[in-house]
Structures are given as structure tokens and as C-alpha cells.
Length: 498
Picture 1 (spheres, helix red, strand yellow):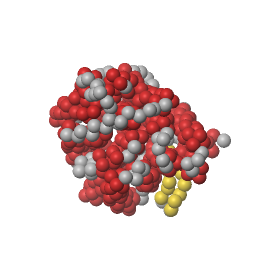
Picture 2 (cartoon, helix red, strand yellow):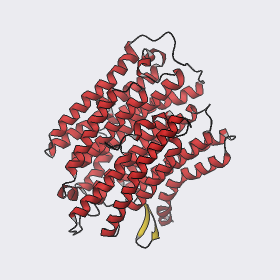
Picture 3 (tube, helix red, strand yellow):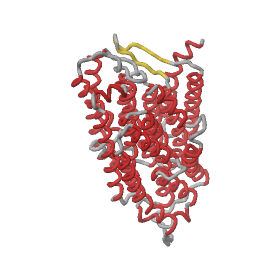
Picture 4 (cartoon, one colour):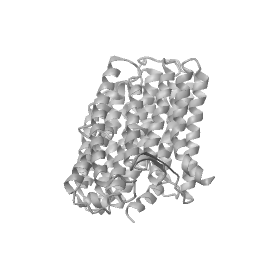
């Protein structure tokens, strides 16, 4: 009985949201109440299943679903510490996003289509989290592209269609290079499961140039979704999508899938030692640093709130890549913990931006004057997210930057301190003027387009932003506790640097 549970549990965890999505498509627009409860029930069930897997892993078990697709090519879904980190983050934030999206889209058309693809997107992301080898990762990585594109173009406007085309051009080009690198790597190694420390670490291969080319092909394939410069252009354009989609792209799914893939590539495929031996870490760290500064500089010039947040994402997600590219346990902890921290802070900011737009029609930075008096709780949540991005203690963003800086010094990469200082100053330069407008400027006589929002809708959306903002503060304040995300990540990193 236990063996059967261990075999099927990863697959069921991945597919539960797919079943919900199919039912939503079949039910159509008429069954609103069914759709609402099905969305919430599926999100809760997925969270419970992830929790069950976590308990099994803590007890020393390794839940794994494995089936042969072709001789030597297995589809593998397996739970380890890293997969559970991403799966737990995704399950938690998806539950909150589901509640937010139900209220946000209450009066919008095509809700069945939206929530159907929304659920399939959950499936793709959970498959990425639970992937046990690079082939399985690639399959769900491509499914993520196909399931998020309808969300990007959901409104059907000319701008949405154009941004959808750009999204596909970038992601499918990256996918083609990913596939070439994957086939080349499997030709050399026969394909291996993810192994802490690298599945290639112990191979005696005299294929240094081949491995270097393969590495960069895979980095480009994953770097498109991770928004590494110059592969980032699709992300700001995708901000024409509804606020729940923006939150989805930036905090939970697409950019996180790319960053998570780069972590898997460095830590579980090549391994930190081989990456260092081949001289691959420093160029990737430099590319990540350029992205961090470049994204922050461009954020300064955006007058649209969501676009400023989008370029902030371009910058902030590269902290994850920077941490694992630098190498060393401390910097790796900084990169991995930012996977969690950036998700919490950025989803809060996009929730708040959606509330500003949905309640008052406020979409431009110049329209934020005095909004703190009109929407105090939402504005307070936005403030927490912004200060966390700057790195103000005790919010979680400070923890990420501290470990990245300390990790860089520990491995002799002191130049990274300059990148972090520049980034912090730029973060302050593009967030503090917003906070000044929100809290210190007088409100206008009339808001751009004030809408009547029901108490239930208001409670769902504002409550979601308060929840994620509170958690962002809590994981910073309680970072030293045994069950904190930081402790969890520290345990994962000890497998890479025993």
C-alpha cells in the first residue's frame, strides 16, 4: 500500500489541477458557482497533497513516479528538498492567487476559458517543480508556454495579441535551443536523473567544448523565461494581461520556472564543481549582474505601474541566477531563498497594482497621489513589498541580499557587492517616489475611474494582498527558526556542498 502511494502521489499532485481545468472547460460560462468552488477546492487539495509529500520526505521516503516513454527515456516525477521548495511556494501562492482572481474577474467575460487555462498552468508549474530529470522538465516547461499564452492574450485587445506573438517568438526560440542542448547532452550521457551535486559530476568526459556549448544552449532556453538580458523583452509587453496573470507570470510560474531550471542545471545536472572547472559560473554571474542593473535602470523610466514592476522583475529574478552562478554554499542559499522571497514580495505588488486599477482606475505612477488615504490597507501592503524589494530589514528581501553579499565575499567575488549596492540604490530610486506619492501627496478631487466593488470582492482582493505582505514580513522576522524557508534552503544546500 505504501509503495503504491509513493508511486502515484507525485502524479496525482501534478494532475489534480488539470482535472479541475478540464471540468471548468466542459462546464462553460454558465456554472459560475461550480467554477468558483472547484478552483478553490483544487487549490486546497493541491496544497494538502504537497504537504503530504513533504511529510513523507521528512520521514525519509522518496515519492517517485516513473514511466518509460522510450527505451532509455523516462518520465520521472520525484520529490526532493528543492522540488518541494518550489512546489510548496507554487501551491501556497496559487491558492491566494485563485481567491484574488475569482474576485478580480467577477464581472469579466470568458472566465471559464481563463480559469481553465489557469488550472492547466498550475499543472505545468507543478510538473516543473516535481520533474526528476531534464527530459521531464522540458516537457512541462513547454506545456507551461502553451498554457500561459492564452492567459497573456486573454483580453483579446490588439496590444494583447501583439504581446502574445512576442511571447511565443521568444519562448519558442528558446525552446528550440533548449531541445538541441537536451538531445546533445543525452547523446553524450544517455540521460540521467537530477542528482544533488550534479549528474555529470563523476563522468569522465573529454568533451569540454561540447559541455560548454550544451550548457549555454540550455541557459538560453531557460534564460528566456528567466528574463535574462537580452532575452527579457517579452516580459514587460506581457503586462497588458489582467493583474492575476501578471502576478502569475512574475511570482509563481513563468519567470520562476526559468530561474528554477537554471538552479537545476547548475546544481543537479552539471554540479557546482563541474561548472567551476569549465569556467561557466563567472560568465553567467556577470550576465545575471548586467540583468540586475539593466532591469533596474529601465524601471526608473516607466510611468506605468505594472511596467515598472515588470522591469523590477527582470532585475530581481536574476538574484537567483547570480547566487547559484557565484557558487559556494552561502551565495547559493541567497539565490535559492530569493526564489521564495521574490515570489512573496512581487505577488503582493501586483495584487496591489490590480486593486489600484480595478477600484479606482489608477494605472500610472502620477495617479498614485494620496491613494494611501483612499486604500490604506492595499497601500500598506504595497509599501511592504516595495521596501522588501529595496532590502529593508526585517522584510524578507534583506535576507536574500545579505546572503548574496556574504556569499560573494566568501568565494572572493567582491565585485558582486558593488552590483548589490547599485541594485539597492536603484531599487530605492524607482520605489521610493511611488511611496512618497501614495502617502505624502494630497489625493485628487476625482479618481480616474472609480468602480463600485462589492464587500466580498474587496475582502478577497485586499485580503490576498495583506496575506502575502504579512508572510513576506514573517519569513524575514522568523528566518532563524527551524521551520523557516531559510532553514529549509540551508538544508537543501548542504546536499550540494557537504
